[in-house]
Image 1 (cartoon, rainbow, N blue to C red):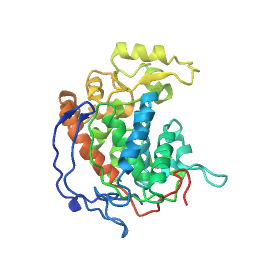
Image 2 (cartoon, rainbow, N blue to C red; image 1 turned 120 degrees about the vertical axis):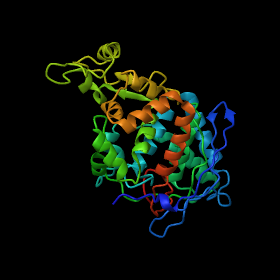
Image 3 (tube, rainbow, N blue to C red; image 1 turned 60 degrees about the horizontal axis):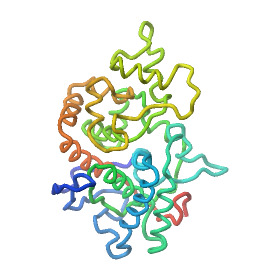
Image 4 (cartoon, rainbow, N blue to C red; image 1 turned 90 degrees about the vertical axis):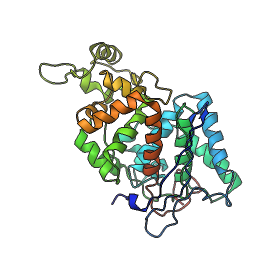
Length: 336
């Protein structure tokens, strides 16, 4: 059963809006109390006494990786999303497969996940300071926050104290992770299963502002879409032509594909603007324009980056609070 977030047990959040080179910084000023099998509640100051330099160590590891590879932020954000949608945000996506178990990271939807090394480096740094204290799930949540901030997006103070899960099954990924061709109803169901709303769906889809999609993720929209229409008519014609050039029908280049939006290394609201102009890349993006409520939200975030940033922080806090009691792994790639 998927862990549930209980909004009625959440207090109000307040934000301040100073400007910085990293984007808009939002400070969470209240603590959210969550249900969950008798485990400790998540809190803002979970490591204040036990490992006060943990956040700084994670940020340093992310910053070092981003300086060498601009694809790292998208990788870390996607890792966190894919972790939280399967058994909650418990770091189970980080576990390696063994001879007797195929883990989440080797499930079909996770075949292109990357940036695991950043979590390994951060964990090594934190373990050197505070052995056995900071969970891999918390490190991943912090790294995702830093990935967004270092790409020009908002920052926030995440709740900490997640446990690391001991179960990681590739079979879970195919049933719980919506794919690039997911329908609106499938997306809505996946979010509802986590106690999240249609608004959360539109907001967190905005995470597609970072990263790259391989041809296989949108091939069906540009070749053989349906009888009488080789290309999805919802696509802007010139955009479709550029995609067909990058991904021909007989494509064999493993690295071929397209950036998720026009500024794929920057966290901004370009994703929504492109979606409105027929330049949304995935079918699961396009479906956000097929319902009045989601279409209104797309228009709002296309018009106001500040509104998107505020909403993104709120939805990330909700999603990343999904957790159940667990251990603190010594090595993020295997349970203790």
